[in-house]
Image: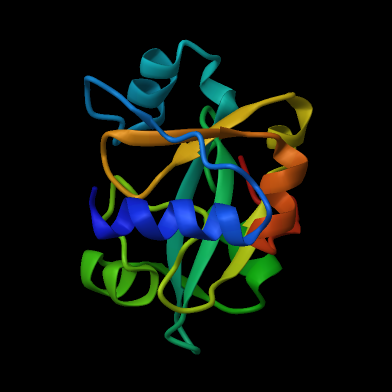
Length: 156
């Protein structure tokens, strides 16, 4: 088991949840791939989109429904600073995950997070579990709680 997957499962246990990670036979790097592998609607995939604060230099996580796109201006407004796309090195340094497997929990360092309200419309959503082949199902209320995200309007 990879270190990243172990970290996600431990974060779920630490939050009082029983990890039910699923290993997919195909990659789940994109929301479409993950939805197809999980057999769910595209918007049931919780994408972990990472931006980097221009002024703070810190990564900021936007948990977004699979079919939605982050609007840069709206995201900057909720974050309170200009945002740049975070490069792979910055993402790995703060979260410990590679792009394509960034989980919403289990980060190496604390991260500010924002929540797309569309995710709350489902009973179950699926998120990356730290690798390009692992996802986990979770109730949106639980993921919102354990991610520490703030609900905000930041999508197109």
